[in-house]
Length: 90
Image 1: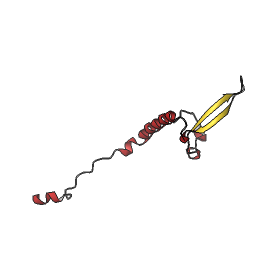
Image 2: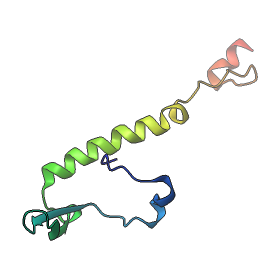
Image 3: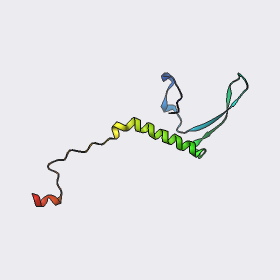
Image 4: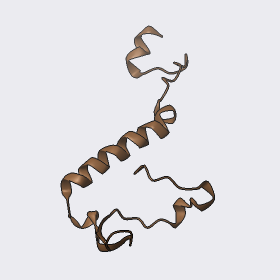
């Protein structure tokens, strides 16, 4: 969803937390890497505009995954199906 590349051997969606975190990093200096400066849940109301963008992306992905299963076909009319309005014609 977020574009992160992960090896299929290490990909275990069931182990993910049911949350969306905004993680801020701080540089440790040239060539020394980064550390997490803050980790906050977007579900707590932080950054509502960003959460709306993520929600829209999730909706698109949901539609892509389930577009074929959600299309309902019209049932074929059964000759034995009738309403009380049809009594006069019988």
